[in-house]
Length: 334
Ligand code: ACO
Image 1: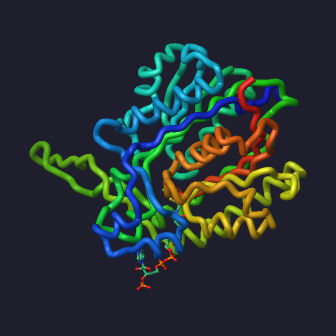
Image 2: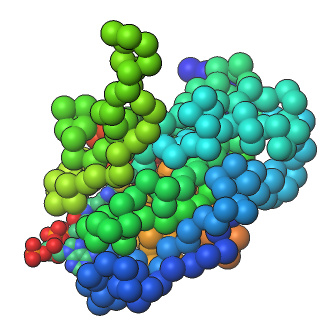
Image 3: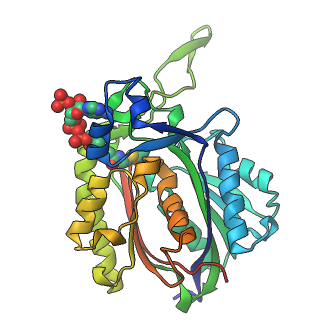
């Protein structure tokens, strides 16, 4: 067993100022507040404006997490940014690193859609537990408003933009805040939810054609993704509880990827977790992809619901298809 564990010691978040209500969306597509609320639990979502693109939002969230942890940017060894909608396909994390002035930190992106934050947190945990690194910022940030088809009512009502970050540091193994984790992928079902490179080619030389860079809008088979989520999320959480010997009634909080209130309720019912212990902010922000879990965590930490020592079962799921779970203990700042 490693000598080190990973402690979750700070959080921060940033959301765009522009909020779009269900009512406003009904001016663009054939939808209504009642349908969106009853089917999803979503009441509004935030949309990035030109003055504040993803890098700025992620930097703000990172600064808030650093301040909460009581760290300086130069203390960081690693900045891992989970995103599927980067400002730069070569990597947005280095832009955040530059903006923060985190000179010592290596910074790179990790792409796993709505599972991205959890996968990134678990990845960062491996560097800390091995003793290779001491302090990391794990950011979940997405600007899917870039990629949704605003004329497709089956998807555009679901997503919003946000960034959030968690500060994690190496700690003695007996204080490990990552009590267990599981990660899964099933690429055979990739077509259920895609944001794929478009298949357009152009001639660049005589006899040579190249693919033109650009992406198709986000496409989703909502019913298939729903069935996948209500089957796999309880299964991965069950695996996790069994492997760690922790029972559902010992959990302080259930913190799932915020995709649909019906999914949160179904998973909570499966484990008989009272709904007041299920964290949800879907009504304000919708599905912010890689940002949902840290955004919700930051809100609950800052309003005093999540306290030092609380045990949290978390699960991310989405495109890939991908899904995973982690049992976390929140430490908070020293
Ligand atoms: N407003 C009004 N009516 C609508 C809307 C809308 N915005 N969208 C769809 N409808 C209609 C449909 O056209 C359909 O009409 P019809 O019966 O006349 O054909 C009817 O409502 C029912 O549609 P369904 O797709 O069956 O609705 P459902 O109850 O399945 O809810 C939803 C759709 C909300 C998308 C749900 O399937 C869902 O949440 N799926 C999971 C999504 C998810 O979890 N994504 C997570 C991953 S995201 C990531 O990784 C980036």
